[in-house]
Length: 234
Image 1 (cartoon, rainbow, N blue to C red):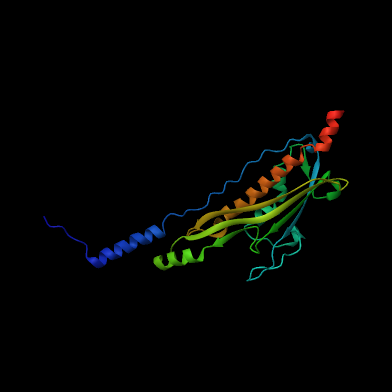
Image 2 (cartoon, rainbow, N blue to C red; image 1 turned 30 degrees about the horizontal axis):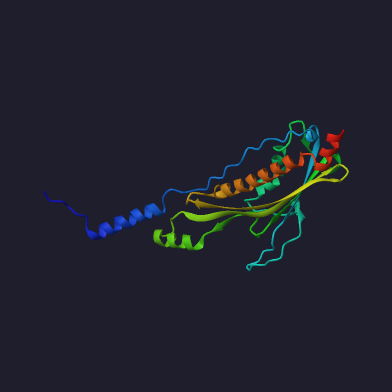
């Protein structure tokens, strides 16, 4: 019984096509889980009014390293990247998740019991969280697949955030600083349009603001050693 063999040119084409399908196959998108934080039910926060005062800084736009850091500016004065804008411009929503249901948030500093001052400092002019395009890796894949391969990125978080909690008399009650550094691989497919390509990075920004702020309020709600000693003597 004779077996019909595929001509060599067609076989090479089939192998090339299979390789093309593998390289341009399923997209391996980063999975960034936004945590559900537990409100800090401290007595000191019950029925209190909070005001958030958020500032931001990043290096000046420069093709070379060593660009000077811009001065801190109120968040409302700055045009943010599409990655960081959702979390940072809705900062009060993230703050709301940290506090007891009986507390509330105001946009009038004079009406507040507490002022939360936040300073976010990015180490890159692309923002505190950004997509880093992997040029060498993508160039090779695009040459092999005629430009139809999925594109590889690293989602990078690289920023410092400082929290300062003041009472209505502008006395500093508690402060804590955080250095955030993380990197997660991410692929974007040919049909990732609009904000879909940015969603995992947006979630990373939200994740670290939630986690650092929650840790801050947990620590801020604990009595200081001096206050604890005073209470134990009374």
